[in-house]
Amino acid sequence: MRIIIFSWEFPPRIVGQLADYVSELASQLARSDVKTYVVTYHDYLTGQYKQPGGFKTYRVTNPVRAHNGILTWALTLNQEVERAAASIFYNTKKHVDLIDAHDWHFIPAAATLKKAFDLPFIYSVETLEDHRSHSANSPFNVAIKSIELLGMNEAERIIVKSEWMQDEVIKGYKVPEDRIKVVLPRSATWIRDILETYKSVAESG
Image (cartoon, rainbow, N blue to C red; front, side):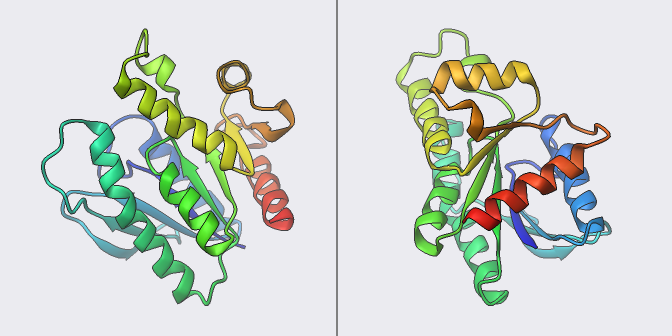
């Protein structure tokens, strides 16, 4: 199996808990004989790198330097994420099984690649805009929530890290429960549950 992970943060660029989580996930997947690529952002470290954990990273930077917020930053960066993933896709002779997109930032790229390459993707929910911003009803918040909704609608499966988040996804985005998989991070069955979800999506794609 060969998978591409999208994450807007990854060591050495650490913003929150997602960076270390994705790093450990990629290492565990590589140990399970999954060919793993992480496409991520960095200000100046760009290109493909082989990581000690046995997986590869492909870092991109934003071609637009000035932004008025996270939304324009993410949207302008998506084209570079698409380009990196497309390079991996073609360099592996189109042998990519799926994309695992973490958080909302690169959902547009995942949805575009799904349409272009018939490449299924999983939306791994880290947080939701309603939780990040109280009274999240400004045009800015609504735009981000529309990207989250795109992910909920286009992803083959949605992975969440708690039953509470599952309930929030169902309540906020009306996602059927059978499309959501609760996977507890670093639990005894963590990687097994991830692999089972990957295989289910790859086989149905």
